[in-house]
Image 1: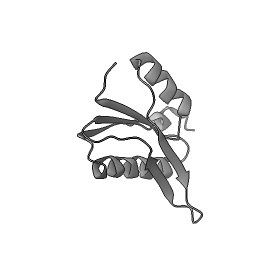
Image 2 (image 1 turned 135 degrees about the vertical axis):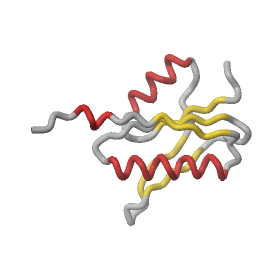
Image 3 (image 1 turned 180 degrees about the vertical axis):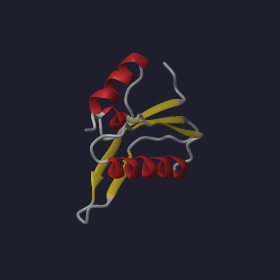
Image 4 (image 1 turned 180 degrees about the horizontal axis):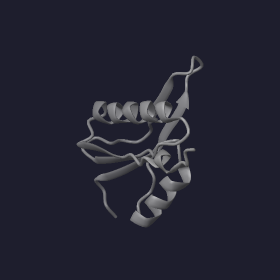
Length: 100
């Protein structure tokens, strides 16, 4: 098992996060994603990422702005928690919509 990698999943597509971690053979990182009562995004990483490579999966879904803010706050939280590296997997799926 790889010890220096943590995969965190955003709230836009939880089943995709689980499939990716199953394929990689590592557990999904423990992270709390919610909204404060005033509507602001809350990201709390519940495990140590100090000195680890963190990969954050967050596809663009219905709420593109909320998903992007959640991703940026997660990156900031990782860097504040002394992660060695924070990388993202940001899939742009909205481009597949049919326009008339």
